[in-house]
Image (cartoon, rainbow, N blue to C red):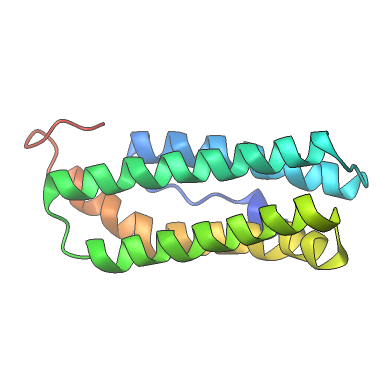
Length: 140
């Protein structure tokens, strides 16, 4: 059975799906490094790539939401803020203590599971609205 991060649900809205694939690749790299017991700069750089990719993607989605006056923007942005806070907390933990067991469990479980759940519960709904609005706004 594949791990939660092995499956990235397609939203069928290409600009969002491309972002998701890039983020999933960065999550895979982070997990591989954790599984190989890597430490130091290599591991922090991999987590930085996840944090930066997720932050950029969330800004991208939030611009799209504004362009189509998405009704669920507040809830969607709240989910983004919560996840970014979690990412930054684990980034701080990694920098302060190295790859603790708590970090390893988070990276190997909750990180991918949360991202997959977010796609299914928030991004697919946004993508439906974006596909319906196609031609009425400039995707970015």
